[in-house]
Every structure is written in C-alpha cells, then in structure tokens.
Image 1 (cartoon, rainbow, N blue to C red):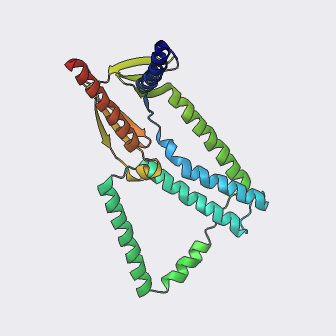
Image 2: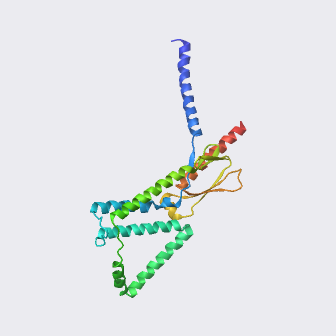
Image 3: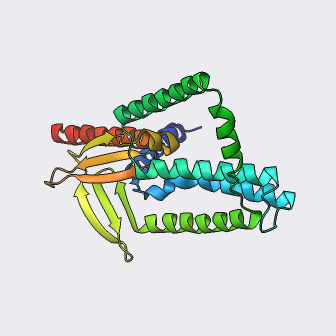
Amino acid sequence: MSEGDHEEQVSRPATGKKTVSENKESQSSRKRILLVPYPKFIFMYPTLIVSVIASVVLWLGGYETVNPAEDTTAVIMTGLFLAVLMANMFVIVFDFPRATSLTLMFIITSVAMGLWLLFLSKPDLLPALESWAKGIRPVANSTFFLCMTFGMGLMYIAVFVSTRFNYWELSNNELLHHHGMLSDLKRYPAPNLRVDKEINDVFEYALLGAGRLILHPATEKRAIVLDNILFVGTKEAEMTKMLGSIKVKIGSDSNG
C-alpha cells in the first residue's frame, strides 16, 4: 500500500464527520416554531366526545324512536350530554384565573355543605325534591346525537382550515405572520424578541394546556397578543431555547 493511498483513507473519515456536522447545522437552521391562535370553540371537544359515545350506545341499542322517554339508557345518555354541554359552555363564556377558581370552589363547597345541613334539619324536603327531579326526564334519540356529532365535526374541520390562514412562525432570525386567503406575510426581527406567558383560565389550561402568549418585537411599539395557544408551556420553552441560541450566535459573530 502506497503512502498516498494511506493518506486518502485517513482523510475520508474526517470528511464524513464534517458532512454530519453540516447536516446538523442545516437542520437546526431550518427549525421553526408554529404559533396558532385558536377560537374558543376548540375547547368543546368533551361535548363532541360524549355526543359520539351517546350516538354509538343508542344506535347499537336500537333507540331510534321519536320519544324514547321510558328507556333509562336514553335518559342517562341525554342527561350526561346536557351536563357536559353546560359545563363546556360555562368554561367558554367565563374566564377563571387562579384566584377566581379558588373562590368558585369555595362557593360550591359552601353551597353543598349548606344543602347537606338543610336536609339533615328538614328530612321531609328530600323526598319532595326527589319526586320533583324524577319528573324531569330530558331525552333524545340516536338521530339527535348523530346530527350533533356531524354538525360539531364540520365546525372542527372549519376551525382547523381557518387556522391555515392565520398563524405565526418563529424561525432562527425572524418572526413571520401568515394571514389572509392569499397567504399575506408580515416579518418581524426575532433577535431581542421578548415573550411573556399568561394563564387566563385554569379550566382551559386543564383541557388543552392553553394560554396567552405576548410577544414584544424590538421594532414594534405595541405588543402582539396571541390567545388560546395550545400547550403554551411547551411553546414558551421552545421559543426561549431558540431565542437564547439566537443571542449566543449573535454574540459569537460579534466577537469574531
């Protein structure tokens, strides 16, 4: 084996390592973080899940009659659907910060304790309320729940399609706002971008980890407020890491 062949074999691994590092740098340079503000309808998915379950249960049970009020299964599924629907709408209509949520829990606990003490002191009220509650039998058949499932499914499709025309993208050196039917684009510089996170509703955060991101570009006087960002904690951590790497690269370039 000649000396030239030996040098050629030694140099090849070094070339291969350089290619791998270049690939890693190119992959990191292409990294991006998408920030999609969703409408509050996105939090209605528990109602959709219950509607799907009720549709399957009643359809398999053969409850397609117009008035299945005498069937216990139909009454139970309808009551469950209404309870989840009302709770879902309650979460959407009102915001519950941490302090408000604690106050609400205290009020509910106080009311429950008050009713318990009332029934202990006046046990005759309980049978009267029980007979009154038994007279309330809201009921729906499988056709109703199938229509609800289909309608809500179409709304979710519309929501996900609409987000394709309004979202934000953070890359290594700029913040992009994609909006409009023709994909209009507005650019903001990413260096010195400050990010704040807010949890405005405890229940929305529990459902989908949703919260608010407030972006402060260096070139803008007004902050950019993005509501209903899903899994906002993860997004904030990714943005902080990317913005930190931008600062490090800028610092290294200036030192060089």
